[in-house]
Length: 285
Image (cartoon, rainbow, N blue to C red; front, side, top):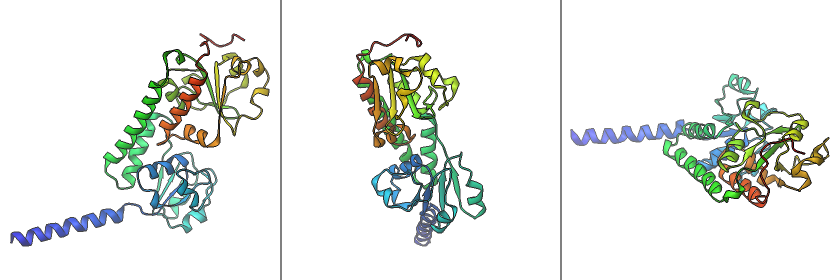
């Protein structure tokens, strides 16, 4: 009887394991680059069958079918891939339509360090992974940001920074994940938290703030210094502008597993211009 019971117990456990493996999604479409990168960092890149037009890391995802963007996903193309899970941003309007077509949708859109940690855990859970996997990924990210902060000398701290994420212009405020990284690096942000994570600014706001250092991606730098009054900015006059190439910019502006790399790139920029004398307040043109 004991042998019979053990055999049945083993059979039950094997069946349960097989069911769990079957239940975990094996065909995933991701419509947000940071979610694509999170899936891959969690070791499930092979389960991706389609991605948005902007997902480009790691290199292997560049060979996958493109199904539009988060704002304008190609519903027909997504359905044709027969996914058992679609990952997308909370701001995407296509969720209801995809759900109406019988697809499982998970909407996630991190904007802070804390939310990145939570999203990593939720993606890991959706993939059927043990919680320890997502926890380890986050610990590595957090340790990398701390290492970037530790690499900066004391005299680099206190520099006031303006980070432009889009030429509208939209900026990274103190409450955004980029703003949180800058704070951990020990520098000031001229865009206060009360304006929101990524506020659209009047260019005159930056003129009044008069940052010591400007950070911007190559995609968005065109015409920046030609805005009214910007030639008088301290950072422009003293050529204290870091222009990140597209690959580096992606690592910085995506709230996901490459945040440690983004922190390292920001720290390099700050170190390069660490001879700047931090201004105590803006407006002194």
